[in-house]
Length: 407
Image (cartoon, rainbow, N blue to C red; front, side, top):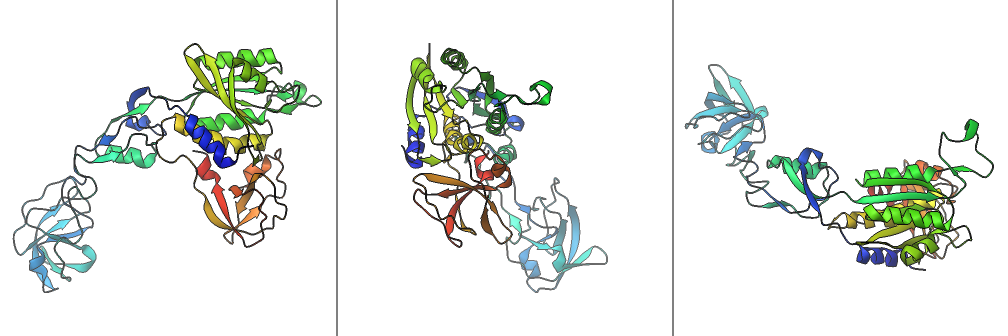
C-alpha cells in the first residue's frame, strides 16, 4: 500500500490542468482560478490622503506643540482642496486628498476648535504623519495577482480596487459522479417511508455533491447505477465523454459484487489502488478512455466517513490542481494538544475525528468507525496520526480543521 504522502505525490504528478479560459465579470468570479496574471494600471492610493479625521497642516507651523491656526477650508473624501497657505489648517476627513502645501495630518483628538474658524494644534507632528502616500499599497504597472490564483473575497476586492471589472479564468472543471450498490435508496423514495430490509439511504450522494459544489465544479450526476459490470462500464463510457473527472462511491473493494475495478480496467486503466490510510484504504485512481483522450477516475469507498475523508485528503487537492491552481493545494495542519489517550497504534496513517474544547485542546469522538457519519458533524476537523503512533493526553498532534478542507 502507498503511504498518504506517496499517494498525494502520485496524484500531483498525474494531474493535467484544464487550459481553456473564459472572461467573467469580477463580481461573478468567486472561487474561480485566474488564467493570466493581473497588473494594476493605477496607483493605490491614487493620491496622498489622510488616514484620520483631523486637520491637514504644515508640520513647521506646529513645532511649538500649541499652535493656533486659521481653518481655511473643509475637505471631505472625494473632493479636492485648495493649496494650503502657511499658518493655516484644513479640516480633513478620512480618505480625503492631502491639499498641496500640507505635509502632515493631526488627528482631531489632539486639536481644539476655537472661535472664528481657528484651531489649536496640541501636538508637534512630524512631516508625513497620518498620510497615506500615493502608490503605497499598489504601484501602477505592478502585478497584483498571479496566474493560478484561486479567487477569494480578498482577491476580488483587490481586483476591484484597481478597476478590473472582468477577469480571465479557467473554465469550470467538469466532474461526473455516480454511486453503486443495489442497497442504496434515495431519501423520499422508500415505499411508505420505510426502508426495505438491508437497504440504506444514499448519504454519499449528498456529501460528495456538496463538496464538489464548494469547489466550484460543474457536476453531472448519473445517480445510482445497478450493481452489474455491464451497467458500470456503460456509465463510465457515458461519463467520460463530456467530463474531466469521474468520481464514484462504493464498489471499489475486491468482492464478487464490486465491479468498479474490472469496469475501469476494461474501459481504461487503474494506476493506484490501495493507500495505507484509515479510514479509506480502498481508493482507486485511473483513467477512462474516450475518443479524444481520457477522463480521470477516482473511486471512493462506500462507507460514508471513508468517502468523506478520502475526498478531503486526496480528491480535493487533485481537483484544485486540475482547476489550474498553481500554489499549495494541501490543507495546513496546526499543532495542538490532545486531551485524550489513543493507546492502540495502527499500521496505517489514521485520521481521527476530533473537536476543539474550551481549554484549547482536542477531544476525540468516542466512535471512530468509518460508518459513523455523526463524527463528522460533531467534529471540528481531523487529527493526522502517523502510522504506528499512540497518543497520550498532553501530546502535541497535527490538527487539520474542516474549514481548511472544504473550500
